[in-house]
Amino acid sequence: MEQRRYKDIVAFKWNQGAPLAFHARNLEVAEISEETWNDMQQTLQTSETSEELALWEQENSPEVKSGKLQPGIRSLTINVTQICNLKCTYCAAGGDGTYGAAQTKINVEKTLPQLKFFIERLPEGSRFKITFLGGEPLLYPDGIQEIGNYVRLMTAGRNIQAGFSIVTNGTLINEKTLNVLKSIKANVTVSLDGPAEINDKARPTKDGSSSTSLVVDGLRKLADNRHSLGLLTVHGVFNRENLDLISAYNFYRTLKVDRYEFTYSVEENDDASNKEFLEQMNSIAAVAYASGGEPELRKIGIFDQYFSALDNQQQTENYCGAGKSFLMVDARNNLFTCPWEVGNKDEQVGQGTQLNEERLAEYQAPLIEKNNCQSCWARFLCGGGCMFIHKQSTGNKHQKDGQFCFRTRGLIATTLLYYKMSRVSC
Image (cartoon, rainbow, N blue to C red; front, side):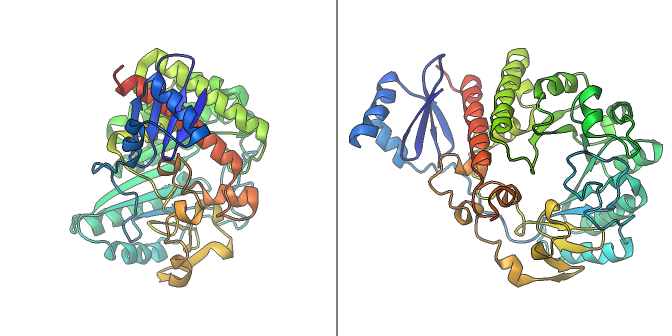
């Protein structure tokens, strides 16, 4: 793939077909002529370009939607437990789901007033999202049920739409936990890193035995009840010890789920495996598109995310809403800006219903601005990148991790190719 750029227009040319161009501000994709492509090469040498290209670059489409986040916390992730029945090799939550401070279950009596505090601050017509996390959250289904019931009760009379999600290892799906998930119509994400020969190495039980058969059985039960649930997703984490994304993808396709997510480990920092991850994602995209076109490709979460942004011309100024629209509640009701920062006092921004407004104020500027991404062509699809990953690599959450940027720009470029194939007429 060859790439050229003129200000906020970036163009790509693969071995097949005409070159395409992407307007970074307007989130527009278009085919361009060979003449325009050659003009862009000339621009690099003489700073001159065609009038047509210059006019397009100067346009500010009225259809573009701002990426600025509305004020107020509209999403909470809650650690209902800080214990786990698995012992994943790459666990970033203290190695055992505890974040270094085991907590069997959250105190619901303390949690409900905390939820009331945030719900009462929302304007009418808002959406309020709760994600249940752990540890393994299904070790405490009664807590999930109580919280879900309370949130639905509190939001029902105020025209606030409540949504629920859970991230689980999938080994504890039984009649009781299913009934809890169905009662709140939860979106369910099940962690699974591939077929048994891969997953059992990365995600064994605490006694070292296989977890995969339990997960697959749990997924079968979830799929059988999908009419009473939200979106069903399988999520894999990959690093230098597990880079067989293609095997994982082929395995995922045998499962009756709606969506597949492939995540490069937040703690990985290896250039060779980073490049291999991107290459395999490109291979998966090719297989998906060849087998089922856009619908099959968009079962892969990251491609669906970018397609939606392009369709809606929706800018993203923040990779996530940490400290702006989102907070993390640990199992002791402490408030943090990020799930990975639980236990880190430097990232604690409150406890119970007490917020540290001074610390929260530090998060309010857009991440594109704070991370100095204003000149990047991918900025309004990326949103400045993950602060935790940046910090893991560089020691500073606002100093960009080059591997993250390389990987993200590569995935966006791949998306643009398939978007052109799906949307742009020749």
